[in-house]
Length: 188
Image (cartoon, rainbow, N blue to C red; front, top):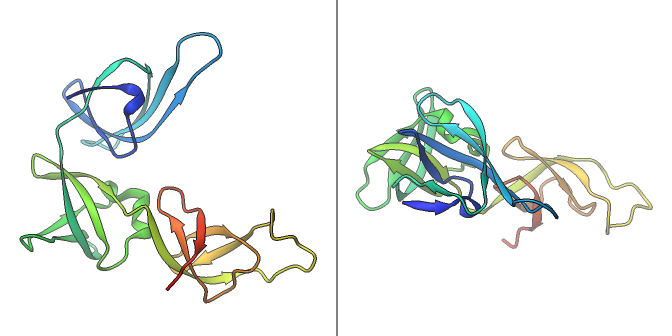
């Protein structure tokens, strides 16, 4: 399936010279003068080599036909990350290099979308937001205004993010899985 370069998003699978690439990031540039371009950072699925390609925003690229299926994350061990198909209860093991930076946000029973190409998992898509508990953060400094000052916090998954001064240890917060930024205090 041919698509224009400016429509590419993280997680898309491209077929270039009979090899599959997963898009890590795609950014469009619109200079005041000259041709608008889209820079695409990709990882070759076969061997994990990262590459960057620049296209004109209207240039056509070949998107591989992959099937997106919903799976439930079960656990991870030395063999990889184990998922279960919600419809037929088939279990599948995904290697760590496919999961990549997303591993830190995986939680048991989490529903994820796995992109499958010829019965091989090539990419994972997490829910946009996850709820985590703050385990450690700096105390509030007197005189700080809440509007602009954020402080570092360590979350229950081992990751770090910046949170507003009123957030303390034990508070559950919502973060974006795309970049780990704080969204809001959890409502549960």
